[in-house]
Length: 140
Ligand SMILES: Cc1cc2nc3c(=O)[nH]c(=O)nc-3n(C[C@H](O)[C@H](O)[C@H](O)COP(=O)(O)OP(=O)(O)OC[C@H]3O[C@@H](n4cnc5c(N)ncnc54)[C@H](O)[C@@H]3O)c2cc1C
Image (tube, rainbow, N blue to C red; front, side, top):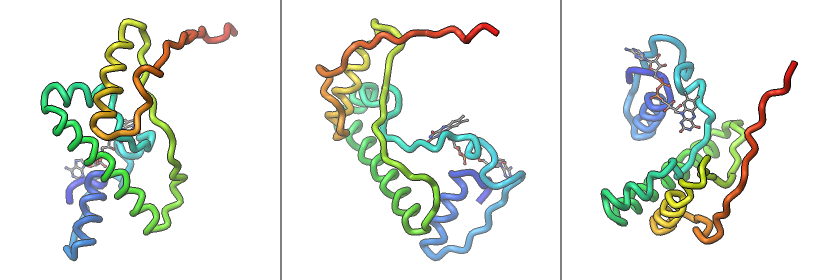
């Protein structure tokens, strides 16, 4: 396996689980590239993916994507449990937000498409507009 980030290490792990002998070749340090700087959030919600998928791949395509994301998260949770990784694993709600009222319609379409794809999403009708203050940094 070339590269010891999350992709290479996960693939190596899966191969070893299936009885293969694997060598990981890492040019620098393990998990020190993009993987070392991730915010470590696993989510099935990816900006406005579901509305796009529903339009381009149909509802079945969007559902397949949602199912694959949820399965991957469940699989990661199982590995964390199995290995007893002290990762601070925590389940939390995911939010998608817009910075301008004109984008609220897109959020509503995304919420509807994500719910249709099987994600537990708050009803679009319950989405409300929230004013956010852009605060300037304190003057020194
Ligand atoms: C600030 C930030 C926040 C992020 N937050 C999230 C998040 O919350 N959730 C999420 O899912 N994703 C997040 N991501 C994205 C995620 O971190 C990356 O998609 C993921 O880490 C990529 O993993 P990787 O294994 O493909 O690449 P890398 O982690 O970059 O690993 C590739 C490795 O391959 C090695 N390599 C390259 N070429 C060679 C070679 N020729 N020979 C040997 N070794 C080589 C490199 O040295 C490196 O260690 C975030 C990314 C950033 C930058």
